[in-house]
Length: 118
Image (tube, rainbow, N blue to C red; front, side, top):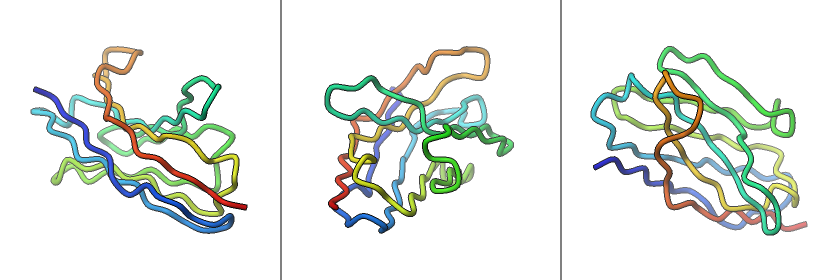
């Protein structure tokens, strides 16, 4: 059974930083591209960043230059370092995984709340 477990969310002031972590119980971690999404109240879920096994990264324009995605393949962990946080970054953040042959993400974590106060 595949599990993705996020941690590291919380309350932070605008301009601050948080680091989200995602522990993956994927049997073959190398077969999966990992992504971070978020969903704010009343808004659609959006892809923020993704990373391949080899380290190829994608960032949405909304977070480019502020957020950094990394992965530790030996530990089966994915991280999202979030700097210069803004109140509009407030949302539930999700870790997700998809196989490299698919477009849609197959597996999702339960989400972690990030709240940025002004």
